[in-house]
Length: 113
Image (cartoon, rainbow, N blue to C red; front, top):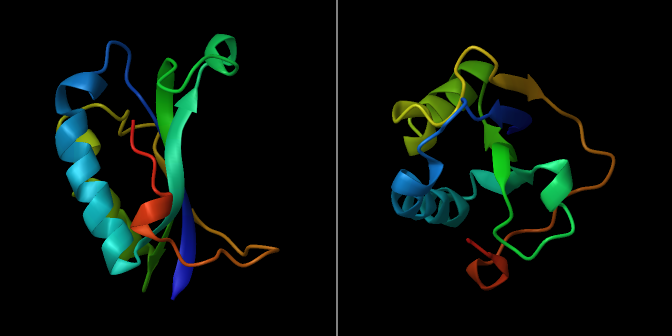
């Protein structure tokens, strides 16, 4: 399967916190399926050294899918997409070749906050 990097910036005044619990449920499912390989919220520069849960302005992830179209369907079904958290006009999905393979994810390694 092909790996895709996804850059999904938030819209101004996003509803990220309002739908976060549903987002986390979906991410757990994608990890369990092996679709989500890595990802997280992108922090603002001023919160980069802050405690976990710093101010986020978007999401970045690596997913696996059969095609670009399949990757887009995965992203477009995500609650942050459907609820208008991510800026649909600025969202980018590109195939990526990793220089180093990603190890399999275990739910024990997942930190959703």
